[in-house]
Image (cartoon, rainbow, N blue to C red):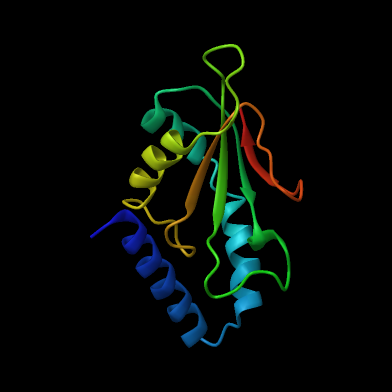
Length: 136
């Protein structure tokens, strides 16, 4: 099974379970944000996977915005790593894929599999929103 398919399946199963227990999607979103905000271990986890210094871990994306999180939304967690060379910066697709492959193997209760985004240098989001979990 591909990591994308596995992530989607896990995400749907976790949400289906939460919704079956009587939670609505907004309650699930709030609970997921609270849970993710406590996952400080993600910094050392990402460092071991990426073999790079992680500067910050933050929740980003639609999960932070009431009313914008849908059943097809991902729970996005961004990781900032230290640049290795001058001029290196921004979202790094290769590092994101490497971390995502590991995150698929380690779902976070009650959220499930999160979508890992690795930024070289500062975390930069379209709307500027982030909830910092931990910094180095």
